[in-house]
Image (cartoon, rainbow, N blue to C red; front, side, top):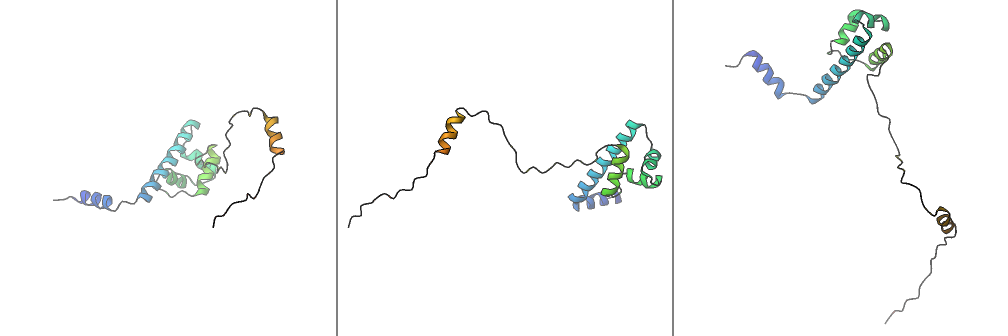
Length: 128
């Protein structure tokens, strides 16, 4: 006979949503990073609330890891703690690779400058 806890766990496993799992993972990662930054500063949640000019209960809710943090609240925490919680890689359009020095640069430049395109029409014999 299944217990109620087993039935709930079974239902959750069968109906698992990877998007929600990822959300929870990221949320917990952010709150852990905030907790570590606060620890390094010797701050309690009340100190963070004062630095952000927020209600302490609101900050406690954020730090629970189960609150839907907005970009605005994340940015406020970053500013108060002096850290980056979200790092976004810049988009690179081009990557340049140094391949070394070209020998005979002057000779190659001269050949390039003197290059003439040839488009000659060669006669062809057609046999009938």
